[in-house]
Length: 133
Ligand code: SF4
Image (cartoon, rainbow, N blue to C red; front, top):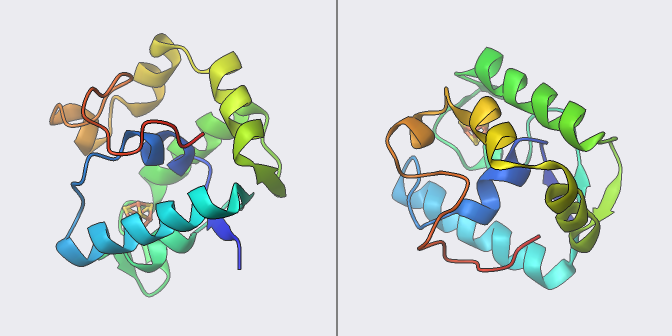
């Protein structure tokens, strides 16, 4: 089955550096990325996704930061003009390259805890997956 992703995770996944909400979540995330690399395509869905399925912040199918993450999702949908459908990773890569500037990234992600803790940013030197999208 193809990986299902919510829009703002298109910004998070390529910047993964091995840290996450819990060790189990990190393992889940790695497996998901491996599958994504193998498939070369994913389904964009405007709601909880497969990453959320393994997250300790998922309380009965709802993110504890639902309002905040929906704000991220809406911003990424607008920026990349996303639809709920199947995308190839190459297509997503092209959209990110065309539309995501550092300024846009900072505008969308500045209220995220990983950004504020200095763990994530537009350019991440130690990211594990050099080319995901
Ligand atoms: S449940 Fe919330 S914090 Fe966890 S991966 Fe999903 S959107 Fe992110």
